[in-house]
Length: 177
Image 1 (spheres, rainbow, N blue to C red):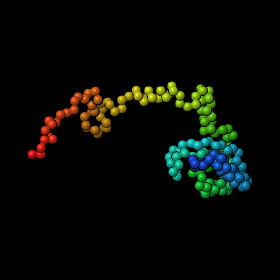
Image 2: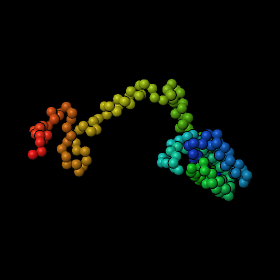
Image 3: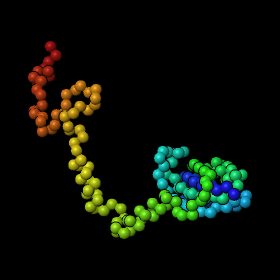
Image 4: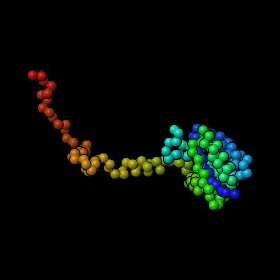
């Protein structure tokens, strides 16, 4: 029987239980047509590379499928109909991998590293390091180089180089004679 890997992305405003129900619905469709799902992985709510149907995030689910082609076609037809599914991709593979996918492994390694270090995210030291790198990371706009290649204007003056404001004689406000 042919082997497939299928990933679908569900909308961001759908609850995780509803995403699990979607996975179960697609599994039942395949099992009803003499197929089976050997592995189902929920990758979580992840950022999308670009907006899809006004969504910036999506719930990712991977299905390892062992089913005939008509069963997979029926599953994809249901994915197209379902409004909660933003995108899907099904590819035929030579062999199914029983191990966790690289994305799931990477997420688990990050969690393990955070737990081992005792950090849950930004701490005071890393926040200070980030702020220091922003402050001392070079002078972006105060240097004497032109701002563009075709910029013929003279270089900008720094605040400490500025003298008193230029005087214009002061006679402009007297009468309109």
